[in-house]
Amino acid sequence: MISMLRRAGISSSMLYTAGFASIGMSVASWMMSRNIESRGLARADRWGIFVGQWAPTFFALGNAMRMEEELGETMPSERVERMKSRAREKMPVS
Image (cartoon, rainbow, N blue to C red; front, top):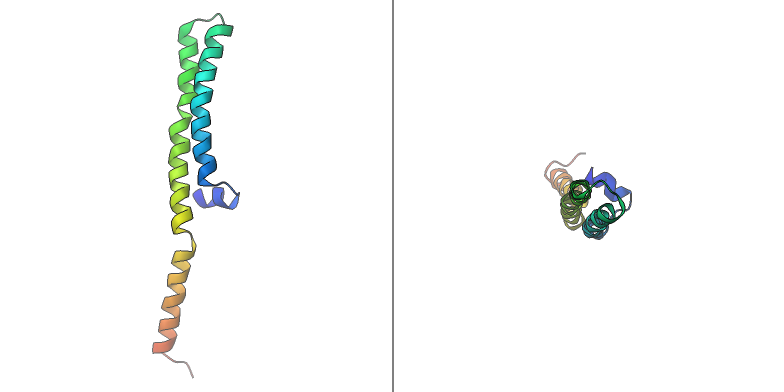
């Protein structure tokens, strides 16, 4: 899933930003629900908590994406190419 997000052009900084935006949206949705709706404080709390639960997901995806960016997909393929070249050197084909 992380490699699919990376191919889509999403970076770790975008995911971290989405996490912080989720925190702000949580507070905003709580305040709007509390002030605009007449359903009471319990409903406002549920809205705030619902939106606030997105933040850890975005931060976890941001960490995974950062690791993907730092380690990258090229390392395993470079390792494979080095192994292939060493194998060719040890077993020359005539």
